[in-house]
Image (cartoon, rainbow, N blue to C red; front, side):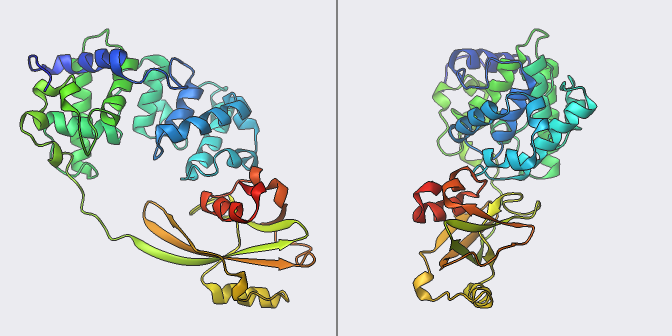
Length: 359
């Protein structure tokens, strides 16, 4: 435990801001900027995504869409390839819709107040507060998973953080901290510090209390209750689903289908998907093709947040184009162009096993 006196609530925010400036993350590509577009993009990408993964996507996205105006002027088809593989594709669709609303309704400028920002598509209370804090220095509390861990441990807040009652208590506590903080509080350092502290020192598995600036008065540290907080929700059994995917190759091209805008991989291009191998083989027979056991490839399991999908790929080659005029949600894509197509990560992995150009 770090030696020192226990912190009063009016010292909590200052201690975190001081720690962040000295020991927090200060060299991420979206830091040291007050541009709300860059801040917003990073906040959306970091939802359900590790920092190390988000950095590459962030830099490529900004290179193609350097301003909110550039994003608003693009089509969804132009946007999705820069999100492919990042998952949770509703984020990308909301990002695009939000950029258009900012340009059409707000003259291309982000609102300055968190309450106004959270009215935009795909932006919740915590994200809106983070944008307002980083871009404009506004004093609004945030509450993501890392912050919940810091608050439940420090203040000894029991109860599942996902429940409405516990979440309300966490938000109320976060607001009390800001109300008690000095008027000159560095909101950028404090907001970033909460995220950094939860992501590094106050980790779930092995918190490093010895280096924590809050340890002397942290309930969980003083009472040795780190493993009990935050309260773990009861694990549900993960559902498993099966499907077969058709890799139909003809004349140097692959048949792809656009996924519906809602649901997994919404808006991306994927392989035609079937409930099972029988349905896939029946489709091939109707096209005059044979899908025998030599066409079956090694299976692939992909894990989503709420289920696991077991994919059985089938590679069928046709001597000539078998669908001269595919459906409106289908397209023949040249194998050499697969690398730039907006493909889900497991589909890209399957195709990369067959075609180097898809990697």
